[in-house]
Length: 264
Ligand code: HEC
Ligand code: HEC
Ligand code: HEC
Ligand code: HEC
Image (cartoon, rainbow, N blue to C red; front, side, top):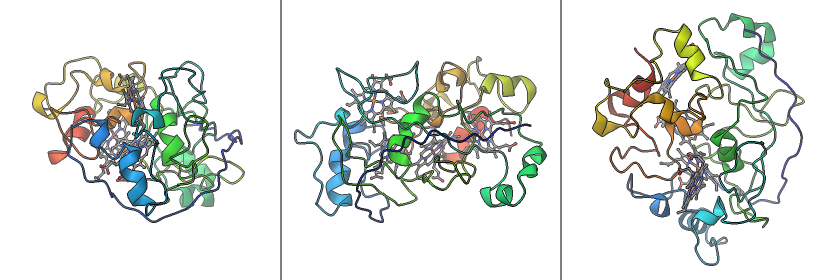
């Protein structure tokens, strides 16, 4: 496989930020909606910031991520669910079956990641919901920066920060997603070549219906094909029927989420 790791566009939103160690402060019940979940920043901010940041003046929930009018750029063309945050434009280091340390020691190892069928191009790997997640989970953007407002609270705990910026390839601005499940590739292309990856367009009969929030795998994929953060996660905590933490679309007991796509 020939992976081109390209330099990301350095358009960082740099904000003055307070930093706190943090792990899961908001207790919540699965499937009860976004307002009672960790994705309601009004619940999270006062606790996490020690009371210095109290959330939206009207305690609006959606506003931290969406606006009914005058949406902002998501950092990509062709996708904008009325977004209300500043764009994350940089590229990220993709999964390739190696840890960053090994890759840095010998970049030719890239050619040795034989088992992976997925073809990931860093230039479009974050397309769809994944790029939106990084406007908080990159550990750089203050989570209370929305509607053009510059916020002040940037969590640094690993529970929130998946790919810290500056942890990428030297000379790149994006973070390191090499130690995270691969995203940003054509699922159907992999399924066609790998008999242990389930077909995307048939009814999922192998996971009990009561344990999943989807009928076919393609419902989990961006444009019915690309695997993204939202393939596994339900950002709004709406999966009342399946009720799986942390914000998952399929239950995790017995690894049912994994077995939805992997025939193992
Ligand atoms: C923490 C950020 C965040 C919050 C808060 C949030 N959303 Fe979203 N929303 C997203 C993301 C990311 C997407 C795109 C990914 C997806 O659809 O899974 C999205 C997509 C959507 C969509 C289009 C796709 C769909 O699921 O129907 C609607 C409608 C929506 N949100 C409504 C809301 C409403 C209404 C609220 C408040 C009650 C809200 N959202 C709160 C992040 C958020
Ligand atoms: C507005 C900022 C923001 C956006 C946008 C956002 N998140 Fe989060 N998310 C957070 C914060 C802050 C927490 C930690 C809050 C807590 O645990 O109390 C969190 C927690 C989580 C958790 C852990 C939940 C748990 O049970 O502890 C998951 C999973 C998650 N986010 C996934 C996503 C995904 C996937 C997206 C994109 C589709 C996304 N988030 C978009 C801010 C955001
Ligand atoms: C293949 C499925 C899958 C994909 C894709 C995925 N996640 Fe997760 N994520 C999980 C599972 C499962 C957990 C819970 C892990 C556990 O409890 O052991 C999790 C946990 C998390 C957490 C909680 C903190 C942690 O590290 O445990 C956050 C935040 C999160 N994911 C965000 C994201 C974001 C952002 C993306 C996209 C870059 C993403 N996830 C892509 C399955 C996935
Ligand atoms: C939405 C479908 C989907 C879900 C859910 C999912 N995966 Fe994957 N996973 C894939 C695909 C597709 C690949 C790429 C496989 C390939 O390239 O051969 C992959 C790749 C992987 C790889 C890397 C394989 C390699 O050859 O390097 C591992 C390991 C893995 N997944 C484990 C898991 C685990 C564990 C879970 C549950 C926490 C999970 N996956 C959930 C679809 C999924």
